[in-house]
Length: 143
Image (tube, rainbow, N blue to C red):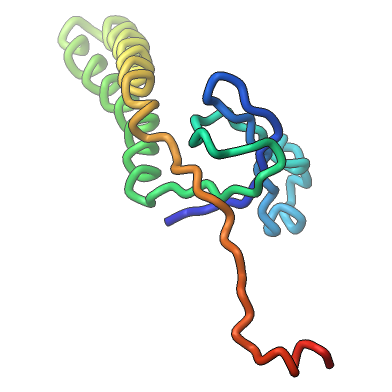
């Protein structure tokens, strides 16, 4: 399970704007914020009716969903491009280039349609932030 901590900024119509904290590894990254995530990320996700602005939340995503999403985004257009090039190559090089571009375009359209249809199914779970309760005796807390 991949998880990130965040807090709810606003809620409207059952959808919450959640500010996700930047992972600590971003501070040591060579791009130093060039990716746009150095100051954190804001996402819009459905939340339970009991959630309130200011609540701390944990966003959790199963690793399998991440792998399937990456395959869908990268492998589908690339496979369609290769298939288009191979199918059109029997009419020459220029047709193969046209087939590759057509296949890439169709692959991107198919990827977009599949992603939109599955977006609600693959959304990360919004969980209450974990609370830590100490099991130490009260006498140790005073020191």
